Structures are given as structure tokens and as C-alpha cells.
Image 1 (cartoon, helix red, strand yellow):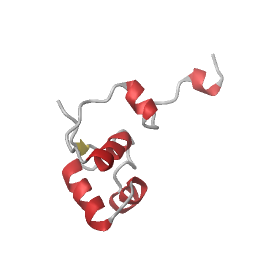
Image 2 (spheres, helix red, strand yellow):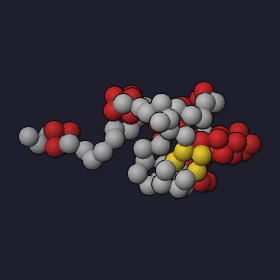
Image 3 (cartoon, rainbow, N blue to C red):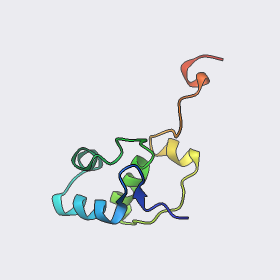
Image 4 (tube, rainbow, N blue to C red):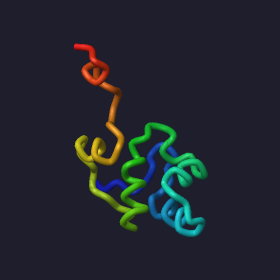
Length: 84
């Protein structure tokens, strides 16, 4: 199943791309204007791809993809905070 929207706000990547292009918004500006990415945050790496590529239907990104795109999915692990 492709990822095509911010699920927290039910905003499609198509509508978000149109908003970003019509107002010349960066990802951070788009997030501020729409609230997208402010809930669970999992759509943020997808937003970067949408604005960078123009694609609005993307495959599910594996955890490594989220790390590369700048957001690690899920709660931080204890090892990430120096705890074992």
C-alpha cells in the first residue's frame, strides 16, 4: 500500500505539493502552514521526498530510510541515550 498522505491530518501529498508549489514553501514552511508533520512526524521524510521529486505516492519507507531522511521512527531506544 503506497503512502500518499499525512495520516494524522488526512492531508494528501498531492494537495500538500500544490500548496508548497503555489506558495513557494520549503518543507519547514509547509509544515508550519498546514500542521502536517506535527503529529506523529512520520510523514516528514515523505514530505521531503514529495517536494524534492514531485512524486505524491511513495512506497513505505523502511526504518533505515527514515534515519537517512532525518527522522527515526518510533520512540528513541535506550541505547540511543547511552543506557543499556
